[in-house]
Amino acid sequence: MTEIAEGVAIVVAFMNEEQKCQYEPEETSWKAKLDGSSESLAKNLKDHCGVPKPGTPASVKDVSASCWPSQAHHLIPWQQLRKHPVTQWVAQSPPVVAGKVLKDNDYSVDHGCNGKFMPYASSLAEWGTASTAKKRELVEAVMSAAGIQLHQGPHSYKSYGVGEDGYKTRVAEYLDRINANSLDHVSVTQCPDCQSKSQGGKLPPRRNVVQFLDKASDRLEVDINLGKVFVSRRAAEFVAAGGVTG
Image (cartoon, rainbow, N blue to C red; front, side):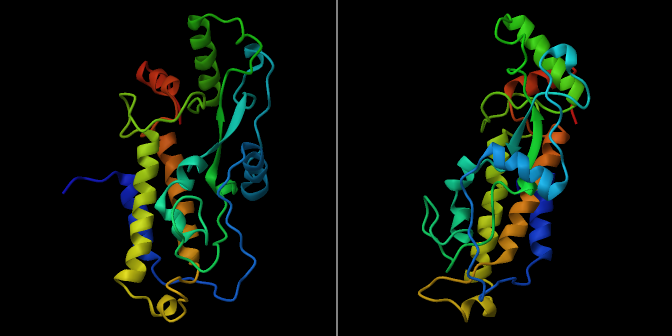
């Protein structure tokens, strides 16, 4: 059997521990949010999790451990989540696959649980006229001060040569496991709570799914902090050259 990553194993173990069905058949006001906003996420990181946005320096001279240019990163990228079959358990009418629930779950990609402030360098005054070599110095200065991977450049399914997986591949591993768990819940386990309340082949929304997604976000942050996955090529190159994040 192929060995699965530690974080994926932890999410699977968490799902196995949380199998008592948690459904809310009387609730009608939930609305899943699958379109993300970095501004909303930044606000919710503070409101939901008590994590304030770092100070914003104008110049690299002002960068410090508490002051570095930041962006709110969706740990589960909302563009990737919207296309994944796991959304059939999140929303009554998800954007890509057919829904399996009678109404939405109360999941939001912009909840603070799905966020992490991460540094970038392109807002620094020096960036616009910097050479390639100077830009490398700037991103390394920002990452060194923040101690966190740079959030600048596209996320990738492929590994950059360090870490265990490409970032989006690791996200997909978590989402695939959650989707399979949810499918097994109704097709194999035959949960009496869900089956007895299904209507037209659809089922009550399960709070478990929200908990599982939040657990996946939590493990993605751990994966980032431990350098098991990298959100950008520059971050991977920085660590490969001996730089420290996490």
